[in-house]
Amino acid sequence: MRLFIAAYLPAAVERHFARMVDTLAVARPMPEGRSLRLAPVEQWHMTLAFLGEVDDARRDDAVEVMGALPVDRPVVRIAGGGTFGRGKFTTLVANVDGDVAPLGDAVRKLLKRRRLPFDRKPLQPHVTIARPGDRLPAADVAADLEVLRAYAGPEWVVDDVRLMKSELGPRPTYEVLATARADERIADRHNPAEHERR
Image (cartoon, rainbow, N blue to C red):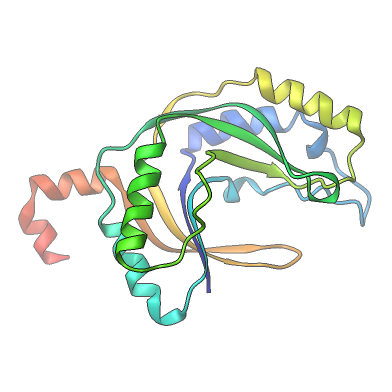
């Protein structure tokens, strides 16, 4: 199974970001066969670690990583943006500002401790908006980048981190395998009896 660990946007941040994305050229309806592969709102996330293909037997090890994540989480915001790749591999992204590195480092240390695979490239916090490839005119890409670079969304605390299973295909699907919420962990610290019952 193909796994990754990601932070998801709170509803208010999602709505604010969606209003900006709706103004972009990549969000315009396109003729059949010219899809710009706009990411659905429910799939917007910031990847903290990409595990790739993991044997089904290691699922519990990956879930245990989620239970060990630190309670203290960074304050972040979506601000600015850019592209990854070139030509048919062009991906339009929004950047995430804030001190995400300690949380990303913690996730990766826990994965390493359990000998789980993960992509070791440096963390570049972002939210993928679309994968237009070379199907969007350069002038439209430039205009979208101008809008993105001027955007600054509301701040939020990264308190919703999920272990996700993804299925590739024309319409990729995602399944939540485990969620680590900072507020629930804090409640457990103040109520050890509740923690014991879980």
